[in-house]
Amino acid sequence: MRAHLGDQLVIERATTGAAKRDGVIIGLHHEDGTPPYDVRWSDTDEVTLVFPGPDAHIRHLEHGRPGSTRAPSGPDRAEAATPARAPGPGDIGRRVAAERRRQSLSREETARRAGMASGYLDYLEEQPADPSTATLIRLADALGTTVTTLRGGGMDLPPGGGQALLHPQLRDIGPEECRTLLSTHGVGRIAVSASGGRPAIVPVNYDVIDDAIVFRTAPNRTPAAAVGTEVAFEVDHMDEALGQGWSVLAVGPASVVTEPDMVRRLTEHAHTTPWAGGEREMWVSIRPAHLTGRRITPADE
Image 1 (cartoon, one colour):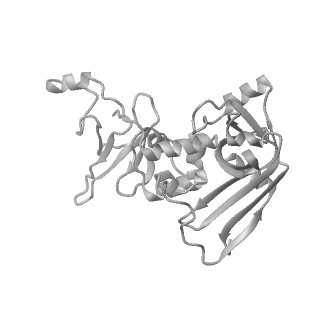
Image 2 (image 1 turned 180 degrees about the vertical axis):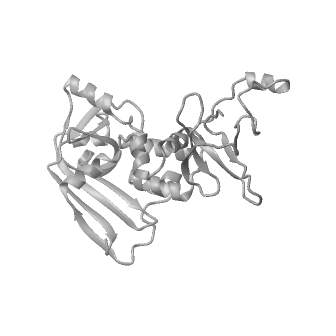
Image 3 (image 1 turned 90 degrees about the vertical axis):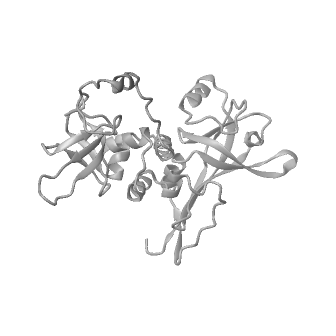
């Protein structure tokens, strides 16, 4: 018995009246496609390691019927000779992968945190999969985000429109947790005095490298006004469905990075280029002198 990712494992029960069971193969343990397999069962949505018995057969993804590794004959031969283009990942898989990479987590570590087979996470990130709500809840918890975010819902809705908690609790966040939360995000807001002394708050793509908040801009852009002054930098996260959230505020001096080796290092370690595009090769570094944060949770937590 040999299989590929995406093939269907079907078990025909020999007992009279017993139900047939099937599932999608989402993980291979041998390069030649021989058992065992990680199977996501269609009836329970659970993923288990399976050593198929004599009552099992493979329904190959390409042909939709039980088969073996024999080459097809007749009209099917021409179809088999043209390799099918591999499907790309679905939107959810792309969001999971992006969130995982942003937090510098491996697939194995993310799967362990979510309590799922690493082979299933491979499948989810590489194929147009449709994970269950339970699976998304576990992944969102493992990645410190929300199911709505992984689904891409609410992207065009203004934040803060959800219902408040019945008994909310506002508590302070310590400096160490503030540093951790800062390092998990990629977009923050910087407050500066713009031209004419007018206050401005603008979003920037940022990274945290060597305990410094760094971002790219251009000399004629508003964020460049931060250089040579003490600025405030804010990051937050809200879970609209649960009415919970947190915010971190960093205050410290901002300076332009001019040392060539450091500029090269920042460019190599950057998780993304500025979303606004254009020529933005001026690196600005903020060294937080003060870190404060607050979190809203249910009163019983």
